[in-house]
Image (cartoon, rainbow, N blue to C red):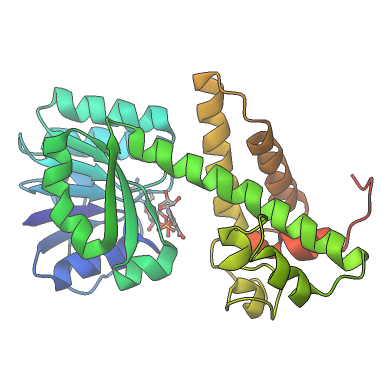
Length: 292
Ligand code: NAD
């Protein structure tokens, strides 16, 4: 296939390289001067999109996606597919899909989980929203860039699945970290705490697979000085998207709201920027009941 790829950063770069390596003809564009193995660089988003069967975007946020989409949609051939893999707000995803469909294009919102390692290794999970025809067109590319793609429903359903998952993840990480900090203060050994909880009803992905306590459980960013991994800044971004969506859908999400406030405090007023999102544990360790 002829593929346009816009946004060749930490995630988009290796995803585009994997498509090129699989034999697709990939033309890329990024605002920054990047070179990706096997990818021909164009000098605008529209130029990268022109004549492509599928155009993939992997951009920082919904505002940038909307701006880039309005440049590239007029340049695309009718029947081509616009596949946005960025994590953006549900409203932007739906609005871009509508604009693409009005122009005779297929559209898919397909945010990913799996991080930079998954992008490089071609093991991402895609959660997709859009028509059956649009999903079918993108599916062979998801198979190259990832290990699993779930068609979640109509436009915006991929973003909805992503932010609901990450709202659970943020809340659960905080719960796991505050429980470790409480266990410390109660004199409970961290390994014993792990041995019990990881096989009891408090178990979770954050405890069992990504344990925030160094030296306990499988290897995780905690064993590497809390270097990300999944950065606290990105968790804050996703929690904000979840609360924006909750606001516009009139959903009551008190735990998501609190998780957003805690990650905002951690990233913006404490030492959280650039740290893994599991660095909530050393944060709680230093704190006392009633601290602001
Ligand atoms: P990044 O900042 O490394 O990459 C974004 C790229 O977009 C940059 O290279 C930037 O120059 C480019 N860009 C910005 N504005 C542009 C424009 N107008 N035209 C063309 N290019 C433009 O970010 P990333 O880590 O690759 O993340 C991309 C998306 O994937 C985000 O939405 C993020 O939330 C999501 N995501 C990231 C991870 C992760 O672990 N990094 C995991 C899952 C999802």
